[in-house]
Image (cartoon, rainbow, N blue to C red):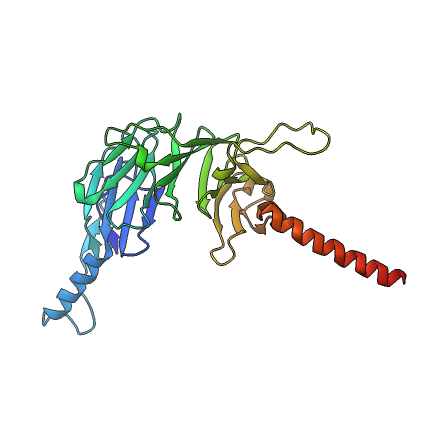
Length: 310
């Protein structure tokens, strides 16, 4: 089927509702467009019940839709938008549904704005955060474990965490925290636990953050290292890619296993790279559990050594 409603290309922003057959998109036309696949399914049901005698059994009538600015027609059923939402001043880079609502969603764009929308309130943004970043915003998502928090990644090399309870319809609100650890544009991020998330960037690194660790830095035991201290909240950095990391996802069944892909065509002679990896469990597990396991391992080694020497 063909979803109509955009006036220009929609190259970056696309989302599917996890609970209903809804599609959300943003484009270069500065619009956010909402469709319902159910509209198409309902049309099919009506067509089958009022089928024309000239329509062969088992087939359906299909209209031709012309793309804007293109005289060539394409075959396929067309679906018009449920709503067209206006408020951005530049290309919309990303859109996301609220995990708990089919009517609420958010969007970000090259105008550096974060916008929250509620389809029940009309086609204007419910909340418009001006200058959420100092550059284009590439990605946005809700924290699925705590729906009050929204994360954004930007070309200013940072990730911002916003609490929607602190935002107003006038767009007033500052980020709960600004995570700074990348050296180039942040392209994507993906949440894991309530306070843990990852971010990937054009610098080739994939960073794992924990908001609960912000302000709880521990002093290093032993001699001081020449490397500068890690940014607040950063507790792991995957450096296995050779070029910009363009996407990654957590394994839903094994939460600390991650798959990531990079655009390193220039260094590999064509094609990108996909990696499946996980950090050592000693990094993310509670310290007391780690120490208890190490003590058991120590006892096991001592017993085995004693038996071998005996």
